[in-house]
Image 1 (cartoon, one colour):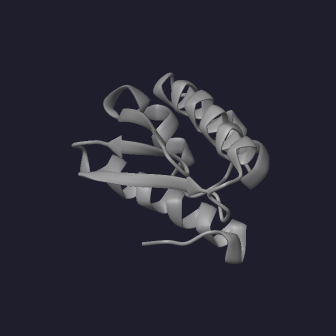
Image 2 (cartoon, helix red, strand yellow):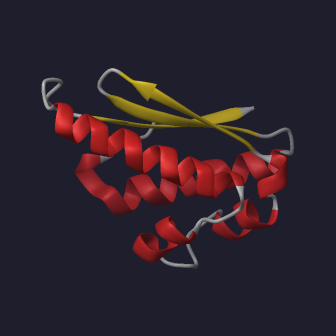
Image 3 (cartoon, helix red, strand yellow):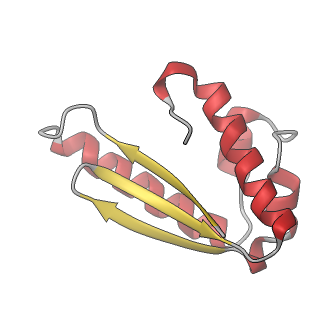
Length: 105
């Protein structure tokens, strides 16, 4: 089971913004693989839904970064249903906090 976090530009000709998105998501994916979720916690708070479970189970989550022509994505895959639920809770909390700039699927 997996979840997908995707960030894309509104204007596909904005190469500078695309490079910033790609750099940021690549760095984040590297941190997440190590169980370091401190960056999102700074923005959304340490008590963000799903965060504690993700930190505790990080070694059981496959995190894959992919550059896209208009941004980047991070794909999360876990077999443990509790971790899958934590990933989706974490996504939901981010979508809720980011308001109209974020879209949940």
